[in-house]
Amino acid sequence: MNNEKKQLRILAPESFRRSLSRRAFIQGGTAAAGFAVLLGACGGSDDAATDGGDSGGEATGDYSRVINKSSGSLAMYTWGDYNDPDIIGALAESELGVTMKVDYYPSNEDLITKLAAGAGNSGFDIVVPTGPYIPQMIEKGLIQKLDMSKIPNFVNLDTAYISRDWDPNNEYSVCKNWGSTGYFYNKTKITRKMETWQDFIDACMNEGSGDCAMIDTAPNMCGMWYWANGHNWNDQDAAKLDACEKFLVDEFAQHIKAFDSYPSTKLAEGAYSLAMGWNGDIRQAYSRIADAGGNPDEWVWVLGAPATELWMDTYCVAAGAPNPDAAHAWINWELVPEISIKDLQYHGYNTGLKNMDTLVAELAPDLKLGEMIFFSPDQVATFQTQEITPTLDRMVDIMNKIKAKAGA
Image (tube, rainbow, N blue to C red; front, top):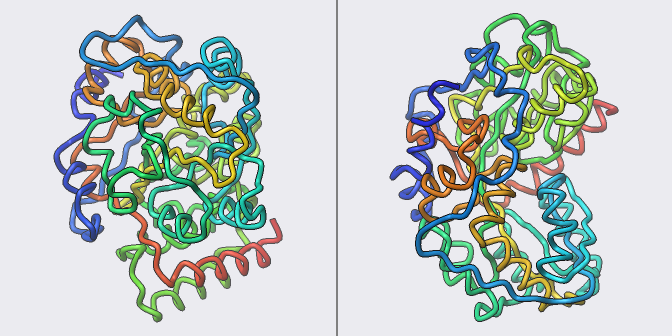
């Protein structure tokens, strides 16, 4: 992409920093002009078929690189395909001295249900909740306080990603990465230009009917309707919830083929012609489509508009973790610049380290599709961070009704 180097210079814009420090987060979802990223404009570039390769070298500058050796097995419960296989495999064994066991969940609600059922004996050491869910996890006793003396590399994080309102002193959590939400479509099947959530909804109900996939979380499913209709997804107005339910259950559900939070693999198999997805997973779809013998140039990524999601996932240690020392060692190791950027190149999300533009230039000079990882100030101005409100239970109920109607 010809504009990639320019975009890598705006990795943590001031608008994003301000949004991360406000208790109310971003409330003006429709105030900014709609904005979509259409990779189809980059057409025949070979970039779309490649994920970026290995790190380019060693980062210069003032970074901590303490590696705390551990032993035994380390069980992590996380989002799908969320770490470089080398990192959770051979590198974890050679550099940390642990053997990783990784299980996956599709939503924060599933994570919380699983941990609550375990009552402190879930068997997991590390979990990866999205930030706003942390207070209820603390209240329910599902995660334990961190020993920050065992995470010296915490100093490598940019200050924009620490001391969040959900955990002001980082007693329970450390930023893993952050991202946003949009959708992906095959332009040979969906031939119109797609730019907004309303475009996505309309295509799912027409030429993409029975061939579309949705993220398997209630807030994202309902959020799509809110954003398409110019509302903030944190709006608690009962009439809006009623309208959301009526449309999604009565009119939209029957067009859904699957609920798939990680659609990149199925997209490569040709299972969907369009899919909602998080930016990193959709970025992986480009290379997987190429690896499967498909043509990635036929596919287009669109960042949701006129508004969409801003999320930050975090590393936490589960209550009753069998190997808490190894869990701390892992979190600390993931903050080593070379490991963090290697992981970024795989999963496609900003990991929040300080001086990110310099790190990318030094460690990943050939990074591909950087515009799907690093967002401009104009884009960030349209992002909304989820708030955990009483409407969440209603959204979960709506999601269950949608699934029952869809039969997917």
